[in-house]
Length: 168
Image (tube, rainbow, N blue to C red; front, side, top):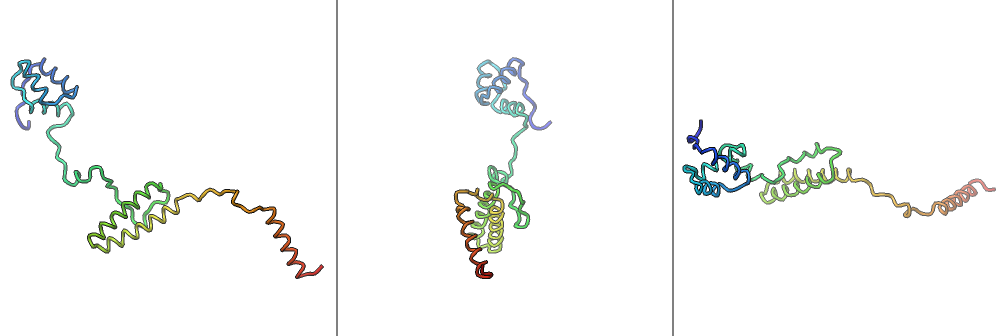
């Protein structure tokens, strides 16, 4: 067994503590309520330990500094220019482009020219992949010239050329 010996609490007080923990009361409020009921030996630390047990954790979790720093940030690595998936969503490509641009500006601030060049190549490859994955614009038939008039014009030119080669 690790740490201190577990404090013995009467059954009625333990039930009240479980109910207050389930209701979300803070440890100090639970300890004060139990002391007001005449229960001795119950401190905020004891109640805090029971709250952690109820949550299923023992003690405080140690979070590495790198994990704390990365919390809430996108930690997925950028693809290499040669390994960009063919059918990736344009929103993902846009996110990768923004991330590559941020990395390029960071490399520029640091003076790391090789990283700046690599991010430039990656950004170019991502922009090209986005262009290829973007669907073509929808064709508007109203933009087409009048085919009947065009057909008559082509027929007139053809007859004129034929008449020049082989006169009637």
